[in-house]
Image 1 (cartoon, rainbow, N blue to C red):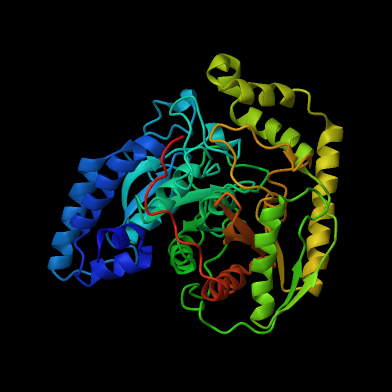
Image 2: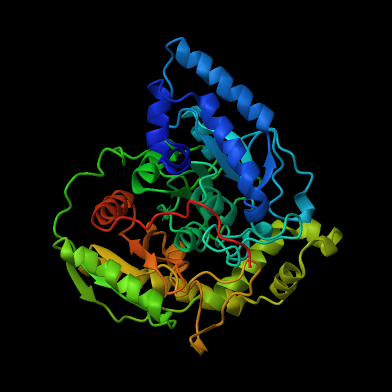
Length: 471
């Protein structure tokens, strides 16, 4: 396989070559390390590397394969781990100066399952400070840039992972989503991203679990099949996560090609809460029409959802303050100025704020329940804009009108529904945009099957084979 094809091949194709003895895991790791050396100075996707350790593991796997041992579905694949997640031997900085010396000796359950499936942890991927903004920039490592345009963000908070995947540096990376942090980077870099049902992959171990119950681990990949295999590997309960779901009784990968019945699909282009950039809407509409061309019934829906953004910010700030209280009271100046403002505001959160947040969340859950009594899927834009600058700011206006840059993603964290972003096309500036596919609760299989059928009917735009020149 030519080097360019090797760099951008799907994870399942590469693992199949490794298992068949047609590609050495050592050669694959060497290629990944060389590409990181070439591209990471411009992209800043990776923040820590263990090249020697990764090569030793690749060599050991090569010996086991030569001896006839079985290898897992991700055999020999170089794996980037998001720097909010724990991998033994690596520092989990969480993108913050507070945690720059936080070297851990354990794996998160998700990382352990990926390693058991044959993946080899190579590096940690960059993330914003303590995940609280939808672009990837921090005071420890700086901003991560998009391989599509170095003056644009790959999104956040899984922006390091998305830049690494979209540039062909690694075939596999972890991601998490507490308000869009899988789907936002997927949308902005032309990848596939799935926020699974709440609790599908466990989040463990954690000394202080989140009580808002909105964050999920999930796949961020170059194709839908990789995501289905990823979910097969990582889904299932963990006794350290009280919200983790029972193991699914199906293989997501094996069900991908089952024909879909004729679906009744709602398409809502604004959810009544934001303007959408006109060329983004053009591509999203064309993407939605793909489902009609496949024989499904696509119905325009004009519902307006309860808007939760401001209330979410207040209540989540109070949760963050509780989790960071020791640091807030003793190492206050090591937070970013933006995060200090957020935590300071949390001191003013009142019972009435909680009441309003809970009321709106209840209304949103009621709305989605009613919607899915009438429809099998909901389609929306993933994001209303194309990617913005690597270090922000987040757009507050869209084509001269007030807009909310992440209005379409976080509602489904609060309802727990599985939601995916598929590439919809390219804007007039040649930048990716996305279509969001939302399914009823616990129907991760339906999101994956619908995404796969869409991918076959409307192949994803080719990822950039080389970096653009810096301006």
